[in-house]
Image (cartoon, rainbow, N blue to C red):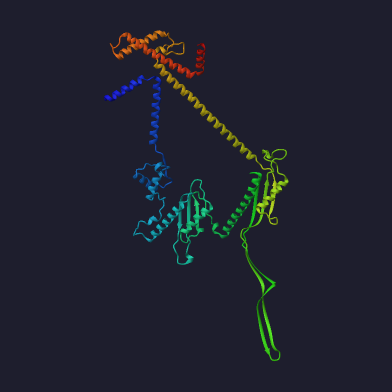
Length: 542
């Protein structure tokens, strides 16, 4: 072993032997904590957290991606039977960009890139097959761009062109969709997919496209291609929109007056979807205007000159061309139910009283207000108002459950904070007591043997249960020990024996005085009131 290492180990052993037991325990605890912290830090640094790079991949696509990861020396992990590839979380986006530059993943479908490689020996039939494959692949990729679609397949049937029209057949298409978990396609999205496929294939009509999901459920319906059915669906949607708008107007007004859930309004609207055009032509014989006048003069020998006048008048005519709006309100049916509130005998249906009960006149006034809000016409519409207590048992039960949960959370939070506070206080006192013991033990160790007295019968620490030596004997023994140590340190012959003893006594006196001062300081800090009383009594005696 090298000399310098031996020296370091020897110094460390010497320092360790000089330490008190409490210091050794504290140093061991600190070293253990540092060791555990270092191990945890190294474990976190070496532990790699993986995130999903691609999921639900075809085996061929997964194999191509794994090959690229190996080339780039990127750590990866395969899960879910090799269909999911995971990489370190800090490199997910970087790896995705790298894969995109390599045109990976391709989604398991082949698009127009099938024509990137030319084959001079390919027949016309193979060219048509490749064209169909490319068209199906491109449509699949486009449909899979939808957020709700996880996977898709498109099948096209494109018949050959015929010379005669009666021999021609229409192309058809079928689309198979795999939706993401908890995802649904609304009717407008299904219509969008249908029209997308129809517009991508020449001669393909929307009614010849079928869309199903992985469970075999038919998603597409051909009613939107029927003008009459489509018109009926739009009319029904418009009717619901008008009814909802009128209900919202009336309900918001009542909620402001009575409060929420104290009234209920339902509106039934009948709309007129007939498209009427009228042309009205009106003539007014009382109002005429001279349009033209013709005068004819004749000369005869017997009668002389005669004049005939012909006047043409224009009768006032009015032409009106009226086109009535489609979807106008034909009639309304309004139903209003009001909770009258608590009566004179108590609450309604067990509900707590809220405000005062409504009189018959108040209910009638509310009815008139609702009529004005929805545009009620007495000759055309129907209106009915009913005062009836609402069933609030379910709401009360739910409110009790919410109150109980809120109260539990409140008390749990209080108990949690109290436990944390008590634990902190207990830990503080335990730590304070431990540090006090450590400091007290170091002070006791640093004192001479005859000064280290316990509180039990005035015995020394080493002499519990046994008869201790008297203070004078201990004092004399300390002087002799100090004298021997001084002689060893300073060497023989420097001072005479009497001078050595005097020097030892001087050092002992200094040690005793410093010990007394430390003891007085400790007593003052521990019991300031008792110390003050002692000082007062000494002053009074003087």
